[in-house]
Image 1 (cartoon, helix red, strand yellow):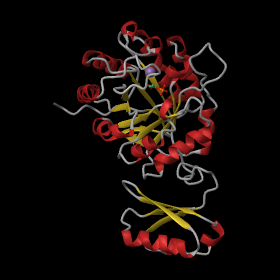
Image 2 (cartoon, rainbow, N blue to C red; image 1 turned 180 degrees about the horizontal axis):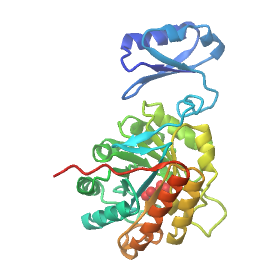
Image 3 (cartoon, helix red, strand yellow; image 1 turned 30 degrees about the horizontal axis):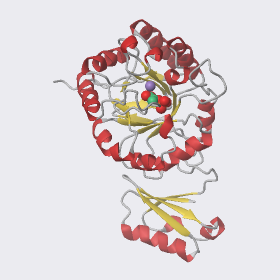
Image 4 (cartoon, rainbow, N blue to C red; image 1 turned 90 degrees about the vertical axis):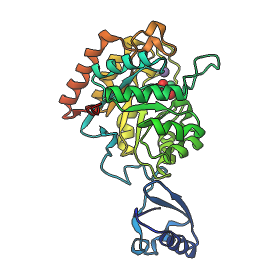
Length: 346
Ligand code: PEP
Ligand code: MN
């Protein structure tokens, strides 16, 4: 059972809930989120049912949820949620394209990639300043200098920024520049990072662990939600299988399955799943056809010189086709292609 407190609930209201639960022999776990406090009850549900928790002052909702993930479950919220990133919608009714370089390398490369993203129909810019690389000898990202580049490019193009954070101790810094925090496949079960992201006050893009089941993925989302942040977008990015022809195997069925189990929006990364430029457009079409709320795609002005993942980056000549595919699928499915905010006049 989960108790959601009203935004104006006081400490006395919270204490009253905890005390009442204790009288019924249960334990209450209080999580004070940015916008609301959530109290998880552990113990025999039958005892809690005899309590009139809903009548207590400051209580907004009492949820009986059988799924192991509670707050992100469709049982909690029958309607699918819409997440807004600096005014850009991701979720039901919209098709959202996110595009940009795998890694931020230079101001020029990032700006060029942002213009490419806009040409591809993107309303959000992706780009990593902290790169979780398999090899310690590979380019690890520019760190804060990369975040500054992203925020300058946002100022110039108006595209809000999605960027990865790999360590809980960096969350505050990354959140001070980014509009959306990305948690990558290798960190899906980094619980300290998930909790810190849940407290950062920014929407989170949670990629599926390459070895994770859908249930584990939703449990990871629950760690973020439990810290008071329900602005989470799930991203299917391919899983490990015996197949070597692709970098990872895009689990296309994960899209409708996750949308059925959770109210959170679900998007697809065709670049990190396929690992090859030639697969990005077909996989994007497949993702949108199956009902994904959007795609996140690598683009690069000069992939042959890219410091990271050049072979999977779309080039200039691919962009009209991606934009057309996004527009066509949006129209077919009765969705609107999400638009970027208009840049502020300088
Ligand atoms: C990325 O999007 O830059 C990335 C590293 O993706 P993933 O975590 O899916 O490998
Ligand atoms: Mn990459």
